[in-house]
Image 1 (cartoon, rainbow, N blue to C red):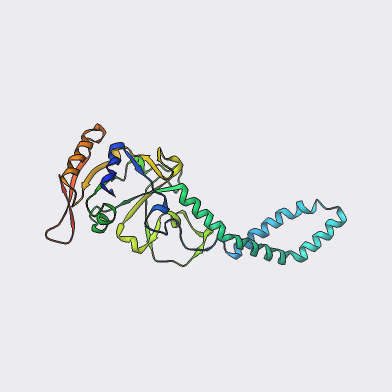
Image 2 (image 1 turned 180 degrees about the horizontal axis):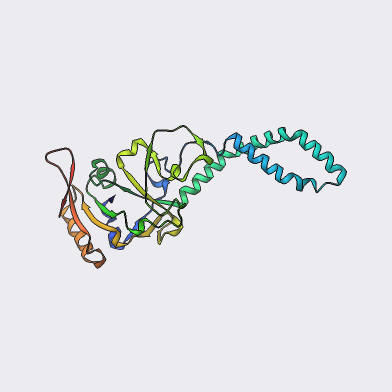
Length: 273
């Protein structure tokens, strides 16, 4: 299966330099990227259990610091006050949850980048939104290329293609209950028409940076199968595209297509050059 990336005219530099941007979630048009609805970091029950386990772990060591007569008194007192102490601690910890959650989301949003691709090159709305109102172009990628399958371990949520799931606006959950798929590969159903696949990579692995925000990754020429010119692309763009492809032998296999508005139905057709 081929996957497609809609691009504006100035992104012809992807082919010129074989570098492509992985974009921070905060720079994308969906304000909820990597920010699922949560009502807290952990449920009150789980928070209380964690605090109880920690108290039981630390209490023996703490009592050892008291002289023996006082240690016995302290132990009795702590047992008597145990439930109240744990409840006070739970409330105090939960007050910090909003700040912790925000810090986690901000960290994720600044340290990870997304390359979004689509199953279709025939979406009129995507040509309009992402390819400069059909003046731009689309890159066709080979989804089986090793570049898209570079996870470090079976549990690695990054570095390999994942299909995006589209969900209804779910009720808030606790952060500790969320999976990697919930956070990185789920979007609301209003985006379902994009039929997105994505690959997420840590931005620290970028091969080049332009300023503080633009993080570029080297993309193998062999991962690119074709280029589709937009329905409104100019003849000058076609000339420039052919010049770029001709200038790099690594791109000699790349095919060029035209996207055209069908004259017989409300659809976009892809026609071989």
